[in-house]
Image 1 (spheres, one colour):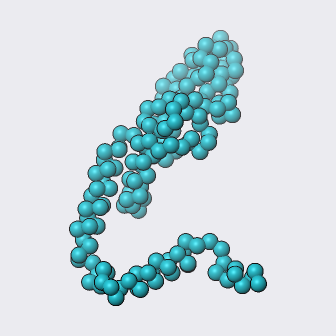
Image 2 (image 1 turned 90 degrees about the vertical axis):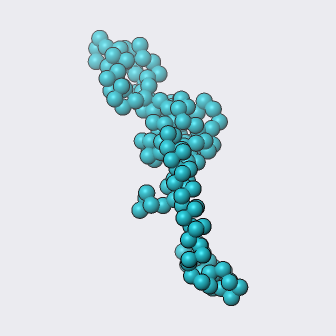
Image 3 (image 1 turned 180 degrees about the vertical axis):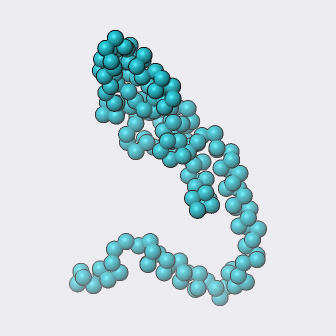
Length: 163
């Protein structure tokens, strides 16, 4: 059902394209927006310390792993105390954590457009009383009851407890 929801493509399009956020306040970015391919600078608390075997530099020891998994070293020529960041670009972070790819931006726009066209096109074929004047109380009741019983937090009788 994840792929059937239009919100999947809306969120992927917005986040992958450039909404401003600081990646859950964990990773500092070079610019103020998240756009595909931007470099990531890990905070000092996110760097993974690694001790390479004797006689190897950090890049010699971690090179094969980084070519497969990505990321970067803050001190590649050191022989001890390697500091590794698991993500080098925003694309790597968004794909690994959220399955969001920057390259899908136009596909997502097309899918959203398809959802909109389908829903607008099918509107006249829905229930005949959907948009009539007499149906307004029913539609309002549906939205009000949905809010009261499904969205609203807290007890319905909390106002009685205050008295």
